[in-house]
Image 1 (cartoon, rainbow, N blue to C red):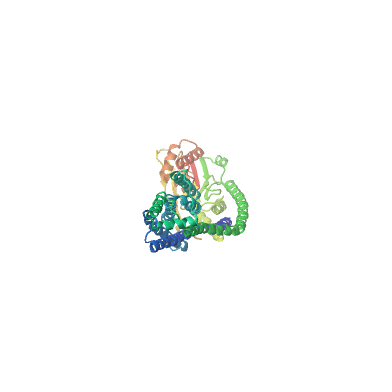
Image 2: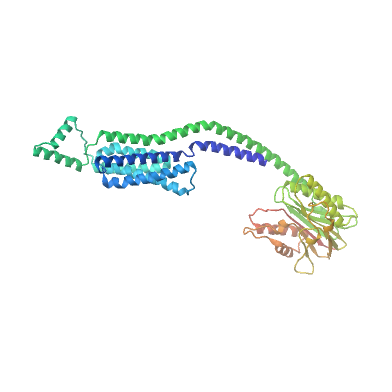
Amino acid sequence: MVKESQKNKDALHEASLILQAPYKNTKKKILVAVNLSLVIITSLHLAIQLISFGHLPEPARDMIMIPLTIGIHAFSAYHHSRLLAGKTNQPRWVSQVSTWASLITLQLFALATVHVNINTATSLIVDSAFSIILVFITGTVINRNAATVWLVISLISFFIAYGNRGSSFEYHLMTQQEVKEYKQNLKSPNRKVRQAARKRQEIVKKEKIEPLSIKLYLSVCLIFLLLAFLPTFFQASMIGQVLKTIPRAIEKIELAADEKNLLKKENVRMSMELDIAKHIQKMVLPREEEFMAFKGLEIGARMDTATEVGGDFYEVLPQKDGSIYFGIGDVTDHGLQSGVVMLMTQAAFRATLDNSDIDITSALNQINSILHQNISRMKDQRNLTLSLLHYHNGTVSMTGQHETVILLRSKEDFAEQIDTMDLGLYVGLIDDFSDHVQESSFDLETGDIMLLYTDGATEALNSADREFGIQGLMQALERHRHHPSQQIVNNIIDEIYEYTGKTDPEDDITIVVVRRTA
């Protein structure tokens, strides 16, 4: 089931990678292309202007914008090229800042070309195309929200430029003959004609309607075409790759869906098996009505599993001579395999002790040998703590290493603990541990209460990761001592759940309470 789940995840992950691959670095490629284009174009423009004219067209604007544009776009191109090559581990914010800085400088340049130009009328027609192209570039490189914001800014900018120009403005072109005559007038030997031409030149410059060379128009058009082409090229390439990868991705998704259905069927089957195992486990546990038949003892017991099948074990086995064997244990871990070991323990316990004359230390050695052989055959590493107790005529003999036995005397206010640490080893680890098994005993007088438990009760955690603890268990027994044994068990487990709150139990909880009544 785990392998099928992993295959399902792998298929979906592979489908995701297939779909991501075409556009994974598209934005970075577009940005680097725009960066490099701007650096080259702006550098050429700067060199040509300085070599040809000795100054820039608009020094107040260009001396700030051009170096800023070159610097920011050069850094962005360098940084994102290294990212594409996988040669940098710079923080993500460096990429974000350089991306935004690249586009903001372009947007500022676009605003400046509309409002600060030698011919504002031309700017409204030609240079505003730069703003339009930037809507596309901004949306492609960043996102549609950024593109929307830039669109709103551009519209406001055009409205302001239109207002500054005035609705009454008309842009009149000159014929080639008129241009020829105008240039001749500027050089005319007639002083009045020359002055009139120069005065007209000053008015044209003041109103920002100076003529521009057709070469400039062609250069600007080529730049705009390039900037519009770069995002389109990479986007079209990405779309083509996406269309090619979709069939492969669909195939992987269909494979994942098939594996998911198989996994679902397997989960249903496993759930049914676990339900059956849980039902079998409950069937072999001592029944409450059995406890009613024991003379001189009042017994209550309960096991709550952390998963569908538990790894805790308890048994109450009456004998023909009136004595009773008790067993309590805890298999390492919990779940189906631990439940199987628990069932084997129960079977070995009954087969070894039921109406036999064997002493409890020999019985524990025999149970250990059976479990060791079975667990080895399972090729498993599980083992268990296990205590065997034999009650006969008011005396309890016990052997095996497990949790402490809690004893609450009828004449005492506080419970005490009887340690089992030196009475044995973990069961199932080795084939023969007879040299390590000891026996001890104590008296159980009328009214005395004996409590057996597994560590799921004491190690239950609350929301602050604090355990219920052995003291919590002993104090709960003291509080409920006057109730019948089964009610004591239920009340203590209820207290444990109240203590843990919404925290799910991490281990099985088993409690057995025995009160001597006669």
